[in-house]
Structure formats: C-alpha cells, structure tokens
Image 1 (cartoon, rainbow, N blue to C red):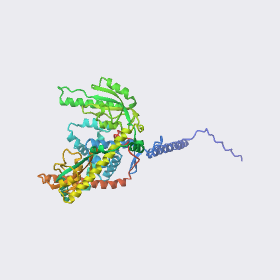
Image 2 (image 1 turned 30 degrees about the vertical axis):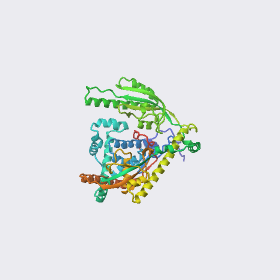
Image 3 (image 1 turned 90 degrees about the vertical axis):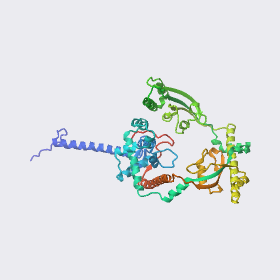
Image 4 (image 1 turned 45 degrees about the vertical axis):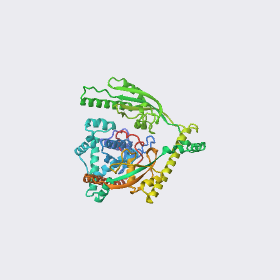
Amino acid sequence: MIRARPRPLNYFTPLSPLNMSLNFFLRGKTFVMIVMVALFAGLAWFSTDYDTRGAQGPTCVIKVYGKCYRDQEVRRLAQFYAVANDILFVDFAMSLFGEDRLDRDPTDFVTNLLVLRHEAKKLGIEPTAEEAKEAIRTAPIFAMQTWINDDILVDRVLAPRGLNKADLIQLGQDYLSWRKISDLLSAGNSAVPIEIEKAYVRDNQQFTASLAEFKREDFVGKVELTDEKIQTYYDEHQEDLLSDEKRGVTALKFSPPAETPEMTAEQKAEQKLAFNNRVNEIYANIAGDESKFADLAKKAKANPENKFEITIEEIAPFAEVSPPELLKDKNEILADIFNPSRSAQPGRSLTVPYPQEDGSYLILKINEVIEPVGLTLEESREQIKTALTAIQSNLLVNEAATEASSKMLEALEAGKPAAEAAKSAGVELKPLPPFSRTNPPAKIEAASQIVSVAMQTRPGSVSEVLPMPAGKGYQFLFVQKTELVESEEADSRKASLRVAANSDYRRTLFKAWFREQLKESGASRSGPVLPDEEEVPTGETEEG
C-alpha cells in the first residue's frame, strides 16, 4: 500500500477564523498584562515614602493611619492654621497647634487636624455645610471688624494662601467637630466650687507693699577693667566676636491714592480695596520670578493703570542694629530681612507686602548678604569692654541686693519695724499703691511679676531677689499686709471664674483624650514642613 506523505506545514497558509480569534486574544492578553504591570509599578512608586527622582529623600512629610501626606499637600493644609488665626478661632488653632510653643512650624497642627477629622468621622460627627457656614459667620473677627464681607475674606485671607470658600467651609466643619468632641468629653463635668472660691480670693486680695530697687548703673563705676581681663575675654570668646552681618535691599513702596473730601465712606472703602488688591497682584507677579524683580518693579512703576505712586529705593548693606531711615523702628520687617532662612537667592529674597501706618505697603528684595567676619583684639576692644562692664556690674548689683534682702529679713524676724529693718539693711523702700492680681500696680515695669511674687510672700516679710527688666538691676518686695476686698460684682466675677475654670477643665479633658487618639493613629513626621520662623507658605494640593 502506498502511504500518502504528510504535507509540510505551510506557515503562509491563512488561519481559520477560530485560529485568528484565539491568536488575537493571546496577544491582547499579553498586552493587557504588560499595561497592568506598568500601572501597578507606577502606583507602587507613588505610594512610596520616598521620591527617587533625584535622591531627594523623604517626601512623605506626615503619615497618619498608614496614609502618606506629601509636602505640597501638607503645606496646603498648613494654611488652615493661618486662616483659623486670621478669623480668630484661636482656641481651636492653638488646641491643635500645641500650647506653649515658641516656634511657628505648623506640621503638628496638620497632623492633629487629620487625626481630628478621622476621629470625628468615627464618632459620627459630620457637620453640614450650612452649619459650617453659620459657624464661620459667628467667628470673632466679624464681630470685631464689621466691615469685613465675603469678598474681602476671599481676597485678603483665602486667595493669598491658595484657598477658596470650599476650604473655609471645611475649616468650619473642623471647628464644629472639635467643639462637639469637647462638649461630649466635658458633659456632666465642671470645676469644683471650692476651687472657684480660692480663685476669687486669689484674684481679689489686695496687697500693701513697697519695692527696694538696686540699679546696675550705680555699680558701673565700681567695675575695674585691666588689659589682662580684656585679653582673657578675647581668648575665651574669639569665635563669637564677629562683625555685624549686613544685608543690602531694594525697597518697593506703594503709596495709596489720595482721598478727596467729596468721596463717600463707601467710595473710600472701594478705593482702598482696589489699591490693596492691585498691590497683591503686583506682588504675586514679582514673586512668580524673583530673578526679574528689577524689571518687573520698573514696569509696575511705569504702568499707567496703577493710579498710585510706586517708589523704588536701593539701600546699601546695613546691620540690623543700624537700619536706614525707611526701616527704623520696623522690627518685624527687619527680623524678616535678617531671618537666617532669607538670602539673596531667588525664592528666598522677597518679603511679603508689609502694611504701614500711612496705608502704604513695603516690599523688600534682598540683593546682597555680607557675612560676619572675625574681629581682632583691637577691633573688638570696645565691644569687650562693654560686655565685661555689663557682666561685672551685674554681679556687683546682684550681690548688693541679695545682701540687703538677707539683712532686712533678719531684722524683721528679730521683731524690728519695717522702717527700722530697712534702715539697718541700707535699703530705701518705695511704697507702691495698693494692688491686686486683677489690678496690678500702674506705671511699674514687669507689674505682673510683682503681683506673682507678692502672692508668694507672707505679710511682714520680703520676697526673693528679682531681676529688673532689660538688665537694669535687681529688686525685692516687702509685703506689709494682704486683705480681701469685697466687691458688689462678686457674683459676676465668680461666674466669670467659673466659665474660665470650666474652659480650662474642658481643654484638659480634650488634650488627654486626643493624646490617646494620636498614639492610635501611628502618626509620624519626617520633619518640619517649612523652616522655623518662616511665614506659613501657600501650596497647591498634591495627591498623597
């Protein structure tokens, strides 16, 4: 039998419709797999805590409940802290910012705000938009400055910080959530009545006292300086004996248009608002590219649409302690110019517009920074003399005040009258007008310190030795007597104390509760969202 030979497979033979469909499916499936792998890789990259694009380190500034919040998002949320303070939701802002803080870094506020939102949602506390709007309308700023309306709020508070009305409503909801949780925690709890009575006595007991002062200037002449002491001080402090840092700036001043007698109050307000808005527009334009400051400032000055005077002044490098006439007594501006985070580099050189008493605005652009350099012994001789004189005269006056206080206390305890005890100690007593905690002595520096010390000193005795303000010397108090001054307003004062005590109690309960929630959130942070003392910046939202 002759067998037929198998036909060779023809690779060019057209496939059947079934084969075509199967082949297309397999190729499509492969393509889908590739796309899915790329997609998941991208998601994994975005969810990482680190940005590997340029080895920039951590971009996950805050992590709460396992979720990462990146730099731009945290910066934007930081604006809520600034706005809360602007509309005087101060208790709310400080509760989340942290009390007794000396810095201005809002990173902790953002962390706590995120935890608050999570806990409020978990408790079923979800204020409506209408409730939030009503809360905003009752903000203290509107009672204190009745001329503020929605447009002004948006233009002058929200827009400069990159926020809008929806963000303000969210802030209102956050405020209501914080208040509702505080209400729940403090329900049925209040301050103990005996504590209110103690507080009333503390606030209304009246002191009859005298002050003994020892001024440092009276001991300056007793200081003995020698070349040996000067050399020793120079050797020990050479690294700190530096010339003053100097900074050169360009000042851009916007003077408001003049008001005419014919203008109504409404027209004046409209003109002022238009001026403020235009200044902000010019500032935003310049801040967009600080490297073109000179050209943009000149264009603004020459622009006929600006119906007000713009002056540009170049100021040679100067030290913070010796500012030019334009900046004298403008401590806030000087502190900003000489802030270590400032420099002549674009992005760090331009200040915000600073309002002046005459209605004008000042913007400063740092052009040059002259770093401090070490001084020689001769260059620093006068500086050393001043320092040594201050140190040694301060030691002498402190010793004199301490010795006199001890002698007078010894004489009083021996039964001598106050006048005789003071004379034996070589002390001149300066009688103070009767005072209390609520009515401290008038025209006395550090009056609150005097009251605090009087409350800790028993009648017929002397207080500890206290430093006088500004290093002027030392002083101590002789308390002759204390007595409770009854008042017709006793009931209302006690009621006020009760409100304050309950508020403190409420704050303490919330703080204790929130501390536990913060632990459960697993919150962590990589560092501050901005350099210390820098103005809270405006940022745009970035997906976290």
